[in-house]
Image 1 (cartoon, one colour):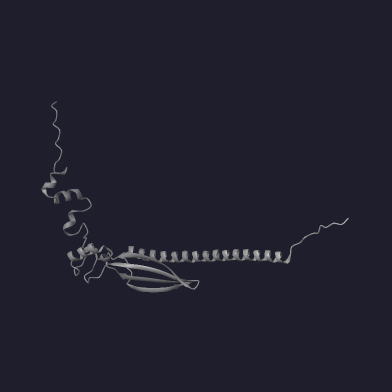
Image 2: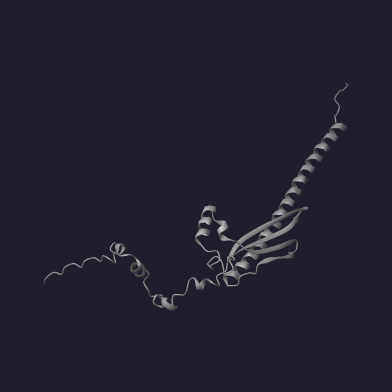
Amino acid sequence: MTTNSRTRGFTLIEVMGAVLVLGLLFTWLASVAMVGLRSEGTDRRRADADLIADLELTTIEASVSAGQMPKDGRSERDEEPYRVFVEIAPIDVLSLLPAPLAKDIAQESDPRAPSVLHDERGESRVRRVSVVVEWDEAGEPAQVERTTYAYDKSELAQFFPSEDSGENAATGPGADPMKELFDASPPELRRLTPMGNPPKSAPQRAR
């Protein structure tokens, strides 16, 4: 009896096709893994740069709170693999306001007179503090920036004298601010307030 059944194996073309498919699949998986590792490294470096910038800004703000204003100028230092830049410069607060409002304030005030915003030289008491952390990311520059504002309060005493100095000695902690406001108000307004129109006492009943 003759049998025509034969065991059929893979041809060379089928084997090469399977190898090609597997090679493309492994190439795609490797590229996805490389992108993931690169993204993880980028996120980690950016998080470290954010931490450095926040720490630098917190240190400056603590000095300002302690009454030590930072000096104007630009400084830089290396903190591998980063480079930290700190720039402190006066800034005109009026320039941050809407143009019409800034124009009205400028017309009604004397720029040469000392104020809470400017000193006797016309220089702003407000400082813009900018912290920039730079690093190289795959051949391309990358950076994070933090900005805050510092205010020089050293000369505010002349505009806001203490309560216990000079003529204001009577208005100490025990003074009643509502009574001071009542005394300074015009007579028409006094009659409208409870202090100016006290309630009438109830008549006493005869025993």
